[in-house]
Image (tube, rainbow over all chains, first blue to last red; front, side):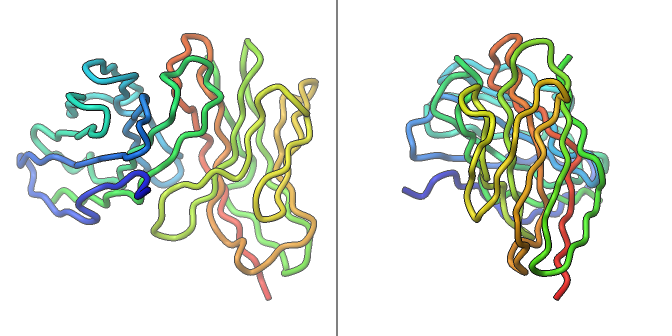
Length: 116
Length: 115
């Protein structure tokens, strides 16, 4: 299994540009999520999904959109990039759809995004 | 609301010394607690987790953590540090109030291991 994969690894955008960060998992996990990591702030949840066709907002959803048309894929869209969205983005997945909260989440390698 | 506080953003130890990384949580319900490790330029990897079974939890790479309800703590320890342990460590609690599966992370602790 490849686990959780993310593309691209690095991206530089200009303010106002849009782009999609890709995330895929091959473990048949129901739960998928997007986090952003900023220095001194740990990881903060952007959006999450408990199954295909179901998404919900996390802690910092503004400026981001998600959809979940398949179990495997969970892309994150930046609608109009801003410098405040410069961060490292991690996708994660777990087997359970948050039924107990004890399931291990598996993280992708991250996408390092810079917005100029 | 649930929260996690990691005491000390940077911890430095000598190789072979005890590693102690502190984590305190706030939760109104019995929590599920996790420690993750992040090596430079990589994603997060699970070290261990507490899911209300044994209070002393053993993880990978010789790490363990003890859940202490009275102190609302879940500190991570390793008896003898190795150079390869240098990384950033995150404590997290699972959001159980609405069962969203959301992880609430602490700010992270960078472990430096000196030769």
